[in-house]
Image 1 (cartoon, rainbow, N blue to C red):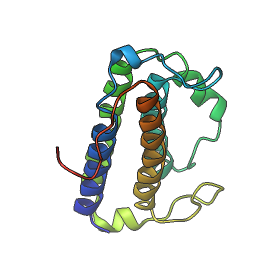
Image 2 (cartoon, rainbow, N blue to C red; image 1 turned 120 degrees about the vertical axis):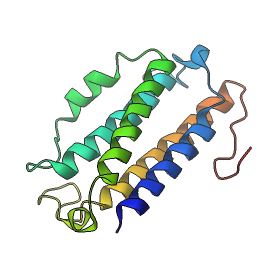
Image 3 (cartoon, rainbow, N blue to C red; image 1 turned 180 degrees about the horizontal axis):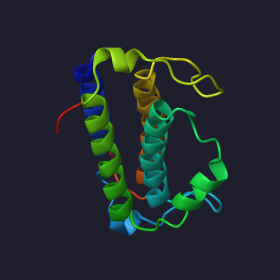
Length: 158
């Protein structure tokens, strides 16, 4: 795996997420499909936080922080889609910068043993970021349609 391939994958992942969710506006920030579900802004914040979590887990000696309750405590207060998107952009920027700064040997180094991707090569978190982001962009397309919006097909230029 090369840094260039990692960066290209992260840029595509960001673009697909942006295309799928750009029909949502600040007015949609606090929408949730049902009581007890997270809001539009919280979904985007969760995606951002999870990118940060994957980066941290891939590059710190102790691996992934499994205190998920504390992670949610940072997402739940988010009420602005603009704020959540800014966080997401910072997270993608950091991921692109980090993976772009590594060489192939560093990307092949093994993750710490553990329950999350134990001993996979570091670059494997790119696929996990893509999967997780795709899952939530799919959820946001449902949110969008429930709000009367038509999301853009993510894989086609407009």
